[in-house]
Length: 111
Image (cartoon, rainbow, N blue to C red; front, side, top):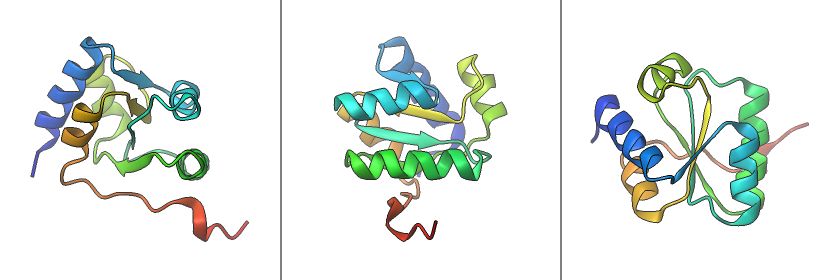
C-alpha cells in the first residue's frame, strides 16, 4: 500500500503531465466530457461537496476515492488548496487509486 508521500509524488507527476484537473468545477467538467478516469477527494472535504461529487461520479460512471490527504496536505504538495482532484489518465488513475477506499455512489441519498 502506498503512503501519502508516494501518492503526492504521483499526483505531482500527473499534474506536470497535464493529466490532473483540480477543483470542483474542473472535475465535474472532466466527468461530463468523459475525460476523467477517477476522482479523488480530500479527507476534510465538506459533506455538501462530497455529496455533489458522488452524484456526478455516479451519473458518469467515474470511480470516486478517498485520498487520505487533507486539503492542507494537498496544498503543500501541489501548491494549490483543493479538496477534489480528477485524473484524466487511466494508468495514473489506477496507480493513485491503489489501496484507497472507493466511495460508494450516491444511491443511498435520503434527501
